Length: 39
Image 1 (cartoon, rainbow, N blue to C red):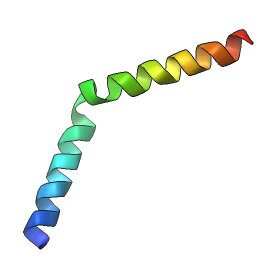
Image 2 (image 1 turned 180 degrees about the vertical axis):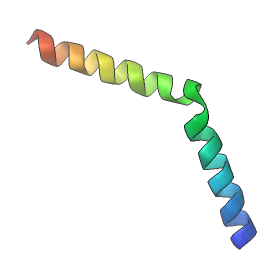
Image 3 (image 1 turned 90 degrees about the horizontal axis):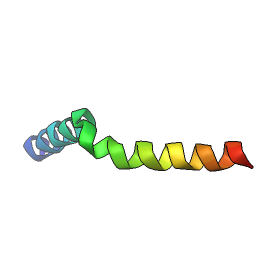
Image 4 (image 1 turned 180 degrees about the horizontal axis):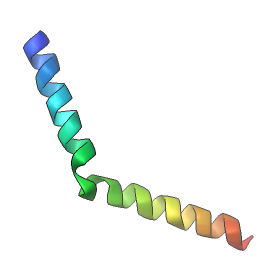
């Protein structure tokens, strides 16, 4: 069970370090902020 947990943590760490995974969130964030600033 702990091996599985460690594997999941390593995968999660990879996902966090993979910038491509953040691009959609960043775009959404910028669009949302742009809309808020314009209004």
